Every structure is written in structure tokens, then in C-alpha cells.
Length: 322
Image: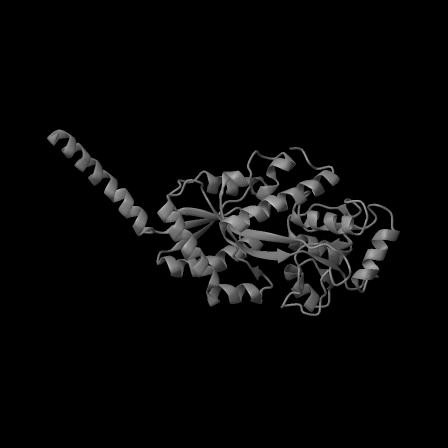
């Protein structure tokens, strides 16, 4: 009996430090992995959020860019990290489509989905000197022209802004590939192609187009958000133009699965407080980024619905492989 009590006592001593460590989290810096390069939308959202999270945790939050594989490398790095709360990440809409595109077996089930952080709506941006002064004129040209006559760009084949264009075309009663997609490495080169006349429309974020719009080099005809952007209040939404379509790229707080419950609870609480801070909300809104905090259950439901919509569009585009 004495031996049994001694063994139980030793077990309690061994277990106590682990419990204490969980309750005390974090006791050292936290890494926040971004699956995309510095300077893009995901990186911008992450660095703004990291400022608030660092204040709430009382520990440094180091943003780490892990690029490659069209997002697969970085998302996998988050999922495969030790589930101790010290490596978390920013998930982007692309990870929902990896299986459908056939690029990876990775999907929402590989990550702990904590909450969306922000959205950036797509838009319809054209040359200032072009023939379309409003969305109605652009839509008429799409309907009247032949398939592929108008070209678009903003991301690689099957990426978020490609899906935005496809959904817009379907909402107009046209083929998903009515706009012939020209792949690009991002918004900046696509906008330069637009100015040069290499493409007809940019369906990426109006936030990226805003400096050129302000300089009179491009015209933003519409945004695909649910409401007008505070930074571009003069630009109508597609819904205002009578089209039942909206699309926004999104960015979310995600983590490896299996984080101890006390640490996960603390992380979620700190994340929610950080997101609500003025030094997070205001810089996002000033850039035309829409802050969102929906929590684990709502985010998981949203991701499932988003995946269904994306898969249908990818099938319509002939890009579905999985």
C-alpha cells in the first residue's frame, strides 16, 4: 500500500508541471506562420493582427513567411507544427480548394479552425481609357461579345480572383470561363498588364487597385462585397447593380490540431481581445480590409459552405481534379 501511494504521488508530481505549463501559456515567443510572401494581403492582415496579439499575450509574436506550392507549403507547416500553442498561423481561402484542384490531400480537417480574421472583397477594375464607364456597360460587353474575348487576371489559374470572375459570369447567366483567364503572380503585375492593355479586367482586390485609381490610370466599376468599401464609398457593389453575386478572399487564425484545451481556450480568448483592439481594427479598415471574428463553430460552417461553392465553380471551369 505504501509503495502504491508513493507511485501515485510521483505520478502527480510528474503531471503537475505539464498542467502548470498549460495554464501559464505562453512563457516564450509565439510564431505566426503566413503561407504567402511578405507584402501581400495575407501578410498585411497577419502583421496587423500580430501587433494586437503580442500585446494581449505579453510575449513577442514573430510573423514567419513560409511560401511555396501555391500555399500548400505554409499551410502544411502550420498543421505539422507541435500542438503546443507556440506555432499558429494564418489560413487563407486556398486551403479549402487544395483537394478539389488535386494539388494536395490537405483540407480544413487538417487544421484547428479558430476564427476568420478579415476579408478583402474582389472587384471589377478596368482601364480608365477603356470603353466601360460603369458595370452595366461592362456586363453588356460580356454578354454581347464572344467567349474569351475579354481577358482577366489577378492570380494563378483556379485562385481566388479567378473564382470571383467565374462566379460573376455565372451570375450573369454566362459560362464560368466567359472571361479568358491569364495567370499572374499577383495583383501588382496584373494591374500593370491592365494599364498596358494586356488584359481587359482585373477582378482582384480594389484595395490593390486604389492607388492607380486615385492616379486616374484605372477605374473600379464595382466591388463584390456585401457593402461598399469605406475607403471607396463611391464604388457600388454588384448587388446594387442588380447582380446576386458577392465574393471576398478571407484570412483566418488557424493552428495545429490537438492543442491542450487550456492553451486553446487561452489562445482563442487572447485572439478575440486582440482582434477587437483599436490598433488592429483601425489599420485594417483604413486599408479597405474588413475585420471579421466569427469563432470556431461559425468559421467551420463558413469554410464548408465556401468549399462547396468553390468546388462547383472549379468544376464549371474544368479545373476540378479531386
